[in-house]
Amino acid sequence: MREAAQLSQAAVATRLGCTQTQVSRLESATRTPSKSDAERLDRLFGGEGTTYFAGLRRRIVARPSGPIWFEGWTEEIEPTAVVLRSWDPLLIPGLLQTEAYARQLFSRAPRAVPEDVEKRVEARLRRRKILDAQNPPSVLVLFDAGVLRRRVGGSEVMSEQLGYLLEVAERPNVTIQVVDPDCLAGLAGAFMIAELPHGQPDVIHADSPVQGQITSEHEFVASIRNRYEAVRAWAYPEHVSLK
Image 1 (tube, rainbow, N blue to C red):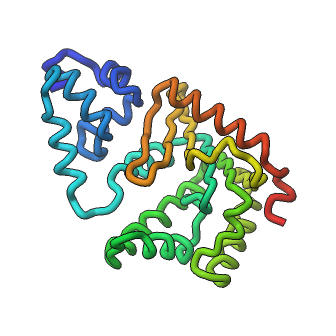
Image 2: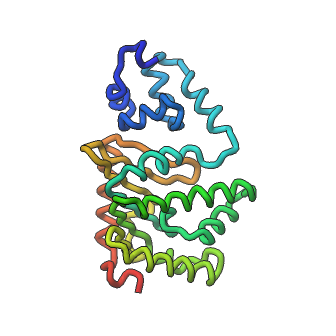
């Protein structure tokens, strides 16, 4: 379809506000398009009123295989990033969660199914592999001070989680900072910023109770970057954050 329209992958990436790699993964069916991507693809290749890609996406997402919308981030963006910045006002960021902490979160979700819970826990733990890569990204983590007081699964789970944070914070590529609870700049929700190599545009993931947004559109990236810096201004120094 793209070739028939005489468009390069780079041209489609520009229209979608994503990277050429993401377009390639769409074409090879290793990436699920977001709702906005599907709508843009329908307009790009079929004009107004066309719903081919939107319908295709609905069929894919209907499969009972967990949070498909997030796979684009964990399978494409995180593994290739050179710098990962994150903020979470409520929870330990997923990349640094222990197995027990993650299992508590997923099992307490409404209508949680044990089989799906285990799949999601496994997927979350797989994300840690990037920390052990030969050239791991710089990981800059911010979370609200209240996160450490929020009991997820009881004292044993929280003790293990805090121990893991202290352990991973010893790595030279990981910086963990706790943010003063009086900070209001990040209350709108959690987000992540991925800085990619070779001059590719940054990509952000902004969280939502239903479905997060993943985009490299400049205005969204700039807005999230500004919010990140506003939150970071309230962060305690690294050497006192986990004391």
